[in-house]
Image (tube, rainbow, N blue to C red; front, top):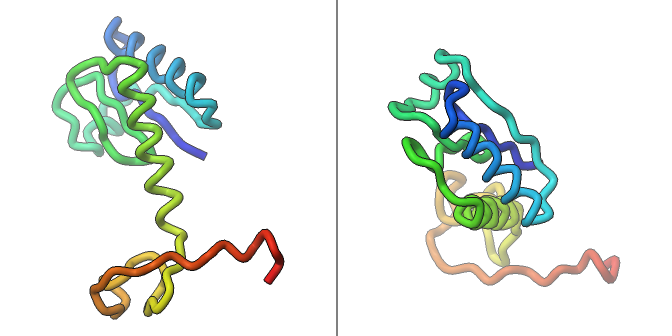
Length: 122
């Protein structure tokens, strides 16, 4: 499940960002949790200097301005695509399956995704 956080005090711009995030998630038919974070210590943990700020799955995506609902929807699509790619197994891959050619000793090269065999039960 995607987590969207709107960082900032209860100012009109923060309220507008929260509403845009809600509309974007609804338009994308995305099951997510949207939170308002007003605690200054929690906001500072994200190294945000200007509010409002938008955090999607722990990553600061926007700070200091209010993005439109369409812009937030595009960010949600990118976050969803990134999550899908993480669990892909690749043919000829060494290591954990999450970092081809990186941390687990796999050789850096292009990989071809394996076919989905789950539907046929093979």
